[in-house]
Image (cartoon, rainbow, N blue to C red; front, side, top):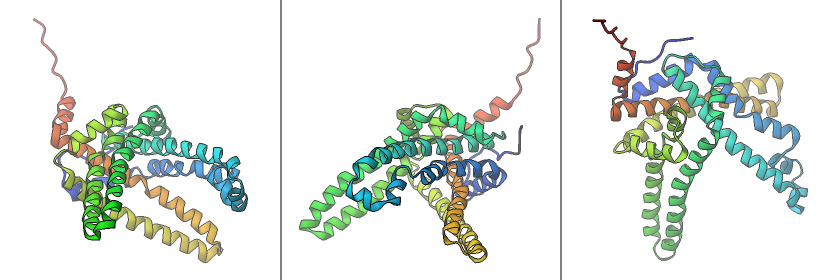
Length: 289
């Protein structure tokens, strides 16, 4: 099934935001289902009392003897690392399909991302290592500098913050490269660094606008839903649960925006729009002599 798709061309920051909102609105059902799928392991763990939720049920027992619960906590953490990587990949997969005028089902998107699960996990871990490793090393420097000169420590701290934002921008396209171009984790990092070269300020600006819009939508939606449930059913626990589920339904917007930005960088760096137009031109029949 084909559907209306945004034209693939260079876009301004506002146009990227507009295209992201349009894709999210036109594919809300698919994106909402994938977003809710992110909460599935949490729901199972809460019902069964697995992992950290088992410790939360009986914190005194956990503090007195944490060893029996540690395997469950570690196992749940590993499952969540894999599952969230797959869910983010599924959102990117579905958004890319919609961007090209196709309409995948949530099952299609999750299957497509699941096949790349290990690469997606590896890409996320490499991103955390790149950003977190630099920040951790700089944090040691700040701690040392703070002992002798707090002013120098402040300057280093600001520099580290800027560096972390820069590295997040440089690694923005890892998931998109893995899902859309079938890259490995290491290739995804290399691809992201290529697409973001000399574009970090633009990427940060676009991401900031999209994150602000996401926060506003999430806050308004959650507050309205929680307020109505609290007013009608007088259940703060149910209100909190439903509010969090509503937030998960909005979460895919960020992945859509990153995907649109990824294609925009490909258009600017590689002429991807020209490549798409060329492929769309029918090949003329070769006359027979």
